[in-house]
Image (cartoon, rainbow, N blue to C red; front, top):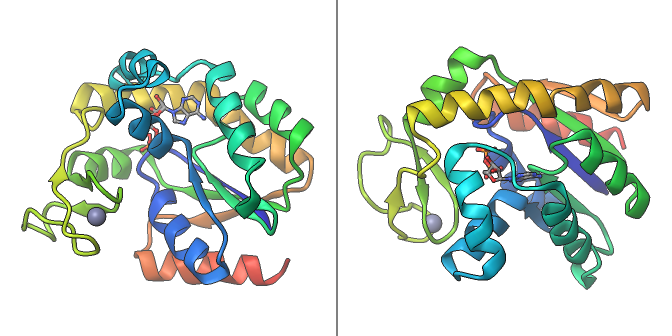
Length: 207
Ligand code: ADP
Ligand code: ZN
């Protein structure tokens, strides 16, 4: 099962991906998490990507394409994987079609107003990347691993707006790209995590 989760920042792709990957025992491949890990490790790639990420812009296509290509070549991807946050441009999608065969692309749909609200309240675990709504989880530690919860540097008001603009301009054309090739399925991302997950599971049971 080779899957892609598509959708705006803060749509809940990461939370849904974690649930799907646990249920089907496939690796969760998040380019955002991989880039943040590279930043934390201060690799030259990470340091170069940091200024784009902090500004809410995309990291260059060739950089992320190479990361994903190498990751998909690893053994644990043989029985399937879930890509979260990749592809984000038509060029990335075209390249991906050269080295991977996708079974399904799931669009997690959420309107801009809700996104802005969600991202400004979001806190992220520095260790395992779990996310929390600050109004619901006021404590300072991650429920799954005890890690420190922080506001991601790109979850600031101005940067959120830019990320949404980038999404509409560069990433949303992928909806048509995948619809035209019959690989797209849409779920409403505005419901609770549990309700969205049952919609996602229903879709996945059909393949
Ligand atoms: P979100 O979906 O909440 O915006 P991600 O963790 O997926 O967050 O991505 C964070 C940032 O990492 C993006 O704003 C972008 O700068 C960079 N990034 C992640 N994936 C890609 C990609 N496929 N192409 C280019 N940049 C990417
Ligand atoms: Zn954690």
